[in-house]
Each structure stands twice: as C-alpha cells, then as structure tokens.
Length: 140
Image (cartoon, rainbow, N blue to C red; front, side, top):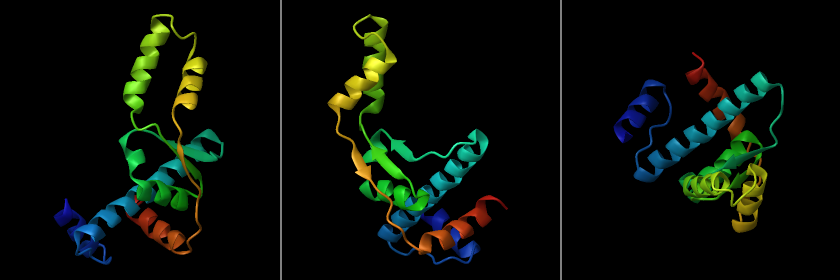
C-alpha cells in the first residue's frame, strides 16, 4: 500500500510521503476527506443536515482519525463503543429472548454502559483547500 500511495501522489503532483508516519497521515487525511464527501452526499440526498457523526467499533481507538473527521466535516464526532458488533449482537439476542423489550431500551443500556469520546471540530483553513483538491480527484 505505501508504494501505491507514493505512486498516486507522484502521478497527481502532490507531496510524496517518505516516512511511515507520513504515509499513515496521508491515509488518515484521505479517510477524513472521504467521510466529508460521503456526508455531503447523504445530506444532499436526504435534504437534512447531520449535526454529529457517530463512529463505532475499532476505528474509535484512533483518536487522530476521530479528530480529523471532526475537523474535516465540521461536525462533532461521538466515538464508541469499541466493541459495537459484540454489544449489538448480545442486545439483539436479549431482545429476541424477551430480556429487553425494545431497541429503545437496548440503546439506553448502551448509553448507560459506555462513555463515548467526544471530538469537537477545530477549524483549520488548510482543510478547504485540501477538500477542493480531493473532490477534484474523486469527481473527475
């Protein structure tokens, strides 16, 4: 993957990441920009503005990705729980067996059981330029 990232950067006349850290940062920046692009598409299709983004599962452990997502989208990010798949599975089984009465009750159990991490957007003027370049790549 690092070879492909470097090759793409060279082909598109972008700075080429040389270190492992720079490659990881390029990948995380790209993910955050893609999240914004998808979010804008969802908002256009639904006719609604989404005020926050919920991230669940293992990705919530990457604090930099969560903060970049908040910064890039301009939306608050609520991260957690980490073990979302297992938690959801257990709760659905509990509903099926009658231990929990509804999805609303299951959501309340999750809310009472896990403390999410909250990431507020921090404005950065460079984001708009990066996003315009990104759109040029994905929309061409």
